[in-house]
Image (cartoon, rainbow, N blue to C red; front, side, top):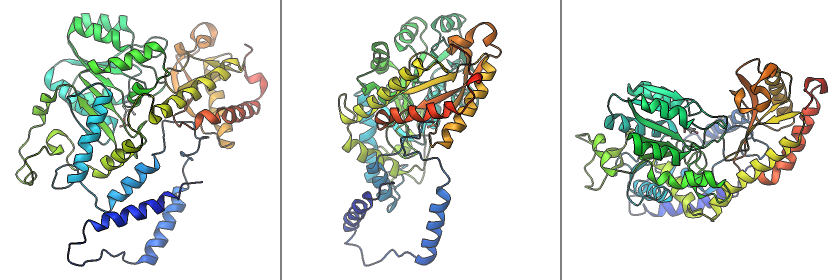
Length: 456
Ligand SMILES: *Cc1c(COP(=O)(O)O)cnc(C)c1O
C-alpha cells in the first residue's frame, strides 16, 4: 500500500546529483557493513509498524497529513548533501530555494515585500513572531482566545511577556465584546488572531480585529499555522473567505507547511509585513558568514542550524503544486472541506449524536447524545475505541459544553466540558471515503447499548 514507485525516480535524481561533483578527484562514499545496515533497517521497519496508519483515508483523527511523495523524495535527495540553511556556506542552493518558497508564501497572503523564513514548526514560528512583538511593545500584554493554541501562553512565559486568554463565543471564535472590554482597560500590546483553531478549525473574525486595531493600536499577529493555506480555497463561507483575504493587513503571519502544505515535519514559516524588523535579529558572528555578502538566513532567524532539506522538499512540492486559487493544491484543500461538510450533514441526521456548529474548515466535532455531559464523554471514549477496532481512527477533544446546545443548559450540563469525537478530514481522499467512514462509525455506534443514548 505504501508508495514505492517513487524510489525509481529518487535513484535517477541521485545519479543526476552525483554528476555535479564529477570534477573532484576520485573518492567513493561507501556504505560500511551493508549486512548489518540491512538488518538494522529491517528492524527499524518492524518498529515503525507500531503507528496508526496516517497515510490511509481511514485515519481521520488528529491533524496528521502525509507529505507529498515529491516532498519525501526531494527531502531524501537533499539528505545525501545534508545542507544547513543557517548560512550560505552550509547550503547555497537550499537557501535560495528557501527564499523563493517563502516569497511565494508571502505572495499568497498578498505581500510583495516581507521578511521571513522557514523554521522547525508553528511553535518556533509563533515564538519569533511574539518575540518581535515583545521588542516592539515592551512591557505590554499578549492576548489570544481561549481556543488559541496552548503554545502562546507557554511561549509568552518563555519570552517573559504577560499573557491573557480572551473568552470565545459559542462557535469557538474570540468574543469581540470580551476583547473590547479587555482592550479598554489598557496594557495590551499584541492580539493573536487564530486563523483556524487546532481543536475545531474556527477562524477568528479578522475584519473586526482589524477595526479594533485601528481604534486601540495594538500589534496583530495571525496564527495561521493550521489554517493559512485555506486562503486559496474557493468553498469557504463568505465570512471566512473575507477573514483570510484580510490576512494581508496582519503585522505577522505564521503558517505550517508541515500541516496543510504536504511537508515532512520540521517545516514552519514565519512572515513579517515590515522587513525592517530584521534589525532585532542582528548579531555578530566571527566565523559564520564569509562566503557571500548576500543575506544568510541565519541573520534573520533565531534558530541557527536548520535543515536545508525542509526547504528543498517544500520547493519541489510547490513546483508540482503552485499556491494558486483554483489550482490543484487549492482543490485538495477544498476536498477536505467537502468531506467535513458531508460527514457533518450525516451526523446532523443521526439521532444518537449531537453536533456543534457547522465546520468552518475541515474539522468536525460531535458528541453522543446522552442524558448528561459526563455520560456523553464516557460514550465518546467507548466509541473512539470501537471505531479504532474497525480501523477507523478518530480523535477525542475535551471542549466547552457551550459548543453543544444539548449540553449547554439544564440537567444535561453536569460539567463545563464534554469529551467529544473529533475528525480532521485533511486528506483530499477523505471526500471519497466519507461513505465508508460513516458506515464504520454507524457499526461502531451499534455496538454500544441502545439505552446508553438519550432520546432526541
Ligand atoms: C499546530 C499549531 C501550532 C503549533 O505548531 P507546531 O508546528 O505543532 O509546533 C500553533 N498554532 C496553531 C493554530 C496550530 O494549529
